[in-house]
Length: 81
Image (cartoon, rainbow, N blue to C red; front, side, top):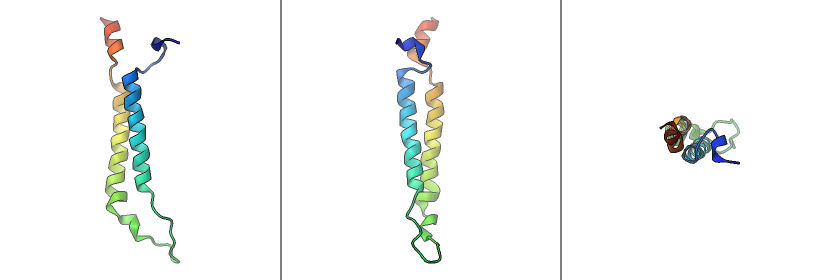
C-alpha cells in the first residue's frame, strides 16, 4: 500500500499522536481519589491541578489535534507544484 492512499502524512500523524497523549494526560490529571469519607465530601476536588492545570492540558491537546489535522504536508505541497 502506498503512502498516497492516506489522507494524513507522517508529520500529521505524529502531531495527532502527541495530541492524543496530551488529552489522555489531561483527563488523568482530572481524576482523583475515590470518596472514602462517610458524608461523601472530598476537599481535593477544588485543587488547582483539577480545576486549572488539567483542563488547560486537555484544551492544548484538542487544539494540537486540530493543528495536526490541518497541518500542510510537504508531500502535498510538492505534488501541487
